[in-house]
Image (cartoon, rainbow, N blue to C red; front, side, top):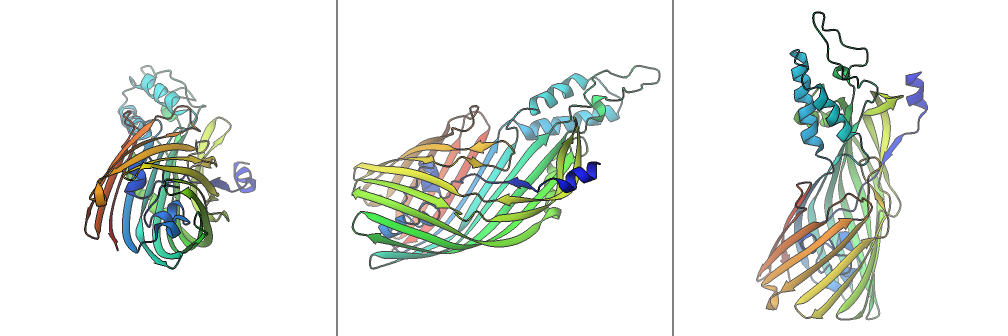
Length: 398
């Protein structure tokens, strides 16, 4: 019966959030749709390439980690408690019950996102073309809690017999799922008059997906991550991005971008943790990671020539790899530059409005210029040890 249930069920579907690519964007809180002024416009808003009008070669690298409920630490502690049980030490039964209760809540999980690549923009006349190879990676971990085997009665001597549904035999599991893509793209942007710019990307997405589930009392976090590699599934799909930038004055602009407008999806094959009644089991079955369209808007204002203030908002509520956890970010930021952009100082903040428990995350970034060479770096931190981001890039601009 269990096998039939899983065979007849639809393929499990997951999606991803809007990542922050590049240190200038991260330093400004991720508010970059209308404020982007470099070749990362390929990601943030391809229309801005026509307004940028510079030849640039840029190599950005970014990493972000979000732990919604201290999953890693709780998992490691559950694994340690299981070691105590195997040594007939049952004093930690109460602690195990509390850990499982903490994890049996909505939106519990951890997410990792990575980005990096090579971007080249080439202006001509009133247009710009760009060629790029951007790598994007998303990974998520989330628990599935066994609520059947939760009896906290400790065995008593002399036989030390456990009750049938003892918490010692709890089957709670963790599922890890990820997608890592390489996206070679050709971008084209042009101006329609003096104030309106449009642009689009045509790209091929080469994807590797991973999925694996394991009972928390059988292995620890580090060993589980290494096992994910064995579930790799490769596929590729074409996709399209598009953007618009409206700049009625030199000091003010409004932008909107839509990414993956054709909703490409990529298959997964591996073990998923599923509830059957109140118990939990792991079953090898197909699924998919679907890149749903992501639509983000932004504004940018330059009250002075050396000061830029920006704000972004996700029009779409984006699913993530953690089931039930969604992301809809509002971001604000500012950049102050010294003459000739010798030094740039950036700051900002962002918050996921789709999650009432999310923290405000603050960002800080710096940039320096030496002739045609530019180096930028940025970081983000939420002061609650739950979210970190860092980004660095090097560019040549002519």
